[in-house]
Length: 121
Image (tube, rainbow, N blue to C red):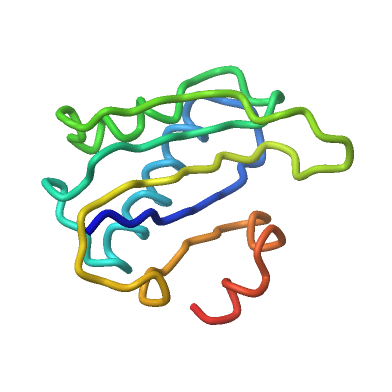
C-alpha cells in the first residue's frame, strides 16, 4: 500500500548550509519515526518559501544517499502572513501502516503549521 508522510522545518538564515542540513535532519527524523526503508520510498516532493533561494532541499536528500529516489523541488505559493523560511516535504512510500499510524514531523517554527499533530509526537 502507498502512503504519504508530511514534514516541515524552518531555518534562520537563507544559506545553502542551513537549507541542506535542516532538510537532512527533517528527513532522518521522518524515516526514523516511521521506520521507512529507503527501498520503500517511491518519491519525495519538496517545496520552499520564496525567501529560500540558495539551495535545493533535494541536495540534502542526495547527500544522505537518496540517489535512486525521484526527488522534486518547487516554490510554495507566496501567501501573505505565512511562515517564512520554510521547507516542506511529502514522501510517498510503500507500507502496511494505516494513515493514523503515520507520524508527520514538524520541526522548529514549522510546529505552528500543524499543532494538532506536533502535540502527539
